[in-house]
Length: 87
View: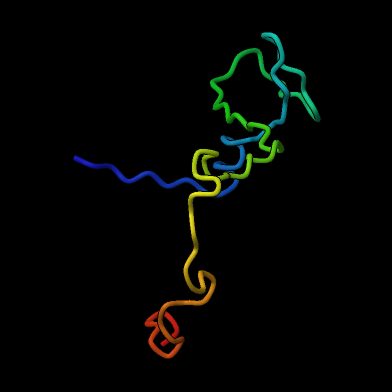
């Protein structure tokens, strides 16, 4: 049997209070306010640093001088009038 549970927004906000910290070498360094609790169950979200740029792909060196491009490789193969996504 299922029971219905009603929770108001204030209760949800109180249950899901967020704090920001940096985890370094086994220790949490709080960035803003620190929670006022002895112990708590936590959810950890890891934010990876994606600031390093992805290396641009390049063709294999073994193809250098062996490939010939024929025709226009930048223009679409069909007219814009025939594109279904523009209709």
